[in-house]
Image (cartoon, each protein chain N blue to C red):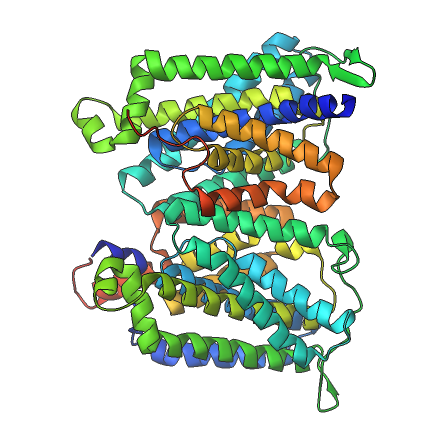
Length: 291
Length: 326
């Protein structure tokens, strides 16, 4: 029982990371139809920037905010300089995906050359406290930060999408871009907002994920892959898709690594995704029949 | 029109190709015999990459499926060949059909359900399959050798001649020529026309009696089996393999070679592969710099030359003849 509680706590912890990455994919994909492979890299850049700022002796809160905004600005820049010209030219899907893959390679290996290839620990916002909840069930202070930030980010994004004009135009653009532009939605602005917001959500993840491990130029790879898997498992129609997909994937992975041989814990995400795509391509949280 | 301009003309070769390609093929055939061992290795890797990009171009360019599992077929072919030779003691020549059959079945396994999927969903499903194959090989224990891979694979013999270095290069050339001929013949056959018709207009193709799902599946299996043969060549040239072979980034790199050449232009794809394989080799880049350079090029090419070299050359040829560019 104790071990099950531990599995659940750890599973939800990594599940929150996957859910937030999935949310950052979702924000861009739902508004623009683009699956931005580079999302994991904005997370990595935020972590590496934070590390660099802290190295210069900049105070922790300033370094945190500056690195998140910096990574978000880079995400915006990639939209403005590369994605917008492609979209305005109606480039085929494959071309856009390849351009995004190019951005991913440039950011990843560019960081590897500029920053070096060492992985270093990034101090967490809550320090290294550990709480014993029960006999052999323990929880890091960082875990509370992860749960809390995930809840707050999802709440903020849902409020933004439902209550603000820009957020609503994101939704309208996802339903019918042509009609949206006819009623005065500026598609370029929507795309910029989606990329900037997605970049910032991914950048926040760095400060949740990296303190558990370390930060280096390859840090974005795994959360990036797991994030888009969680998104397609959960579904693409509402922010609850990424949330459910991410939490489910996290708990399943930790449970598999606890109770099954390692091949299952490593492969379970891909098995789950292929099952979902072939059996229920719309994902777990699909469109409600009556709107 | 839009499908045509994206994928390029299907079958005709430009007049220049008539003498250019035989000359290039001849150069490819004799060059390594003047060079050292390093040149032979570069040439072997180039020819293997050409088989991969030509088959990828077949499934992406001519069949119109955006599938991202090509590296899984290549790696599975390499691993099946190596496992057959080292764990079961099979002759390399028996390993080749084994690899092709196993990978053909794998392609059917992923292709059957995914022939219903389109666009982004197909890309995600096939990419995920590719990642899964990488995990299985990494975690495969003694069978696949895990992260260490398989070493000391016995070399292939041809009537008592050990195939290594230059003698193996001859085999690779035969393999490349065979793959090229298979693809060209398929493209010029009824099957090829049905595959292209399915790409250009699935509904019209279905209305004239073609089964679009079947055409997509057949195209995928043909490309996968050729990739498996390329994997077999890789295994018995290098005689050691490791899971790095299965990194999904390779699919993107080959896909980019196809794009640089021009999706659907066989000649352009050959040119793109030559350029992107040989230029970093001769400039002597480190691996990280090469990948960074490829990333920069990807962004530039997609922005400024989305139809690739094939498209650029075609436009230039039109201007030369005084026709208006399309």
